[in-house]
Image: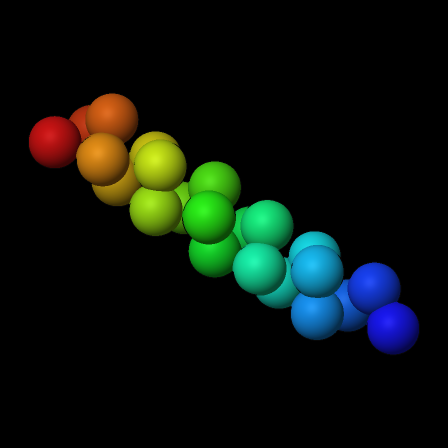
Length: 22
Protein backbone atom coordinates (compact mmCIF):
# COMPACT_ATOMS: atom_id res chain seq x y z
CA UNK A 1 0.00 0.00 0.00
CA UNK A 2 2.94 2.30 0.65
CA UNK A 3 4.61 1.15 -2.53
CA UNK A 4 2.94 3.97 -4.45
CA UNK A 5 4.24 6.58 -2.01
CA UNK A 6 7.70 5.06 -2.23
CA UNK A 7 7.69 5.24 -6.02
CA UNK A 8 6.52 8.85 -5.92
CA UNK A 9 9.26 9.75 -3.45
CA UNK A 10 11.87 8.03 -5.59
CA UNK A 11 10.64 9.89 -8.65
CA UNK A 12 10.79 13.20 -6.80
CA UNK A 13 14.27 12.46 -5.49
CA UNK A 14 15.45 11.63 -8.98
CA UNK A 15 13.91 14.80 -10.40
CA UNK A 16 15.59 16.92 -7.73
CA UNK A 17 18.90 15.17 -8.38
CA UNK A 18 18.66 15.96 -12.09
CA UNK A 19 17.79 19.59 -11.34
CA UNK A 20 20.79 19.91 -9.02
CA UNK A 21 23.05 18.28 -11.60
CA UNK A 22 22.00 20.75 -14.29
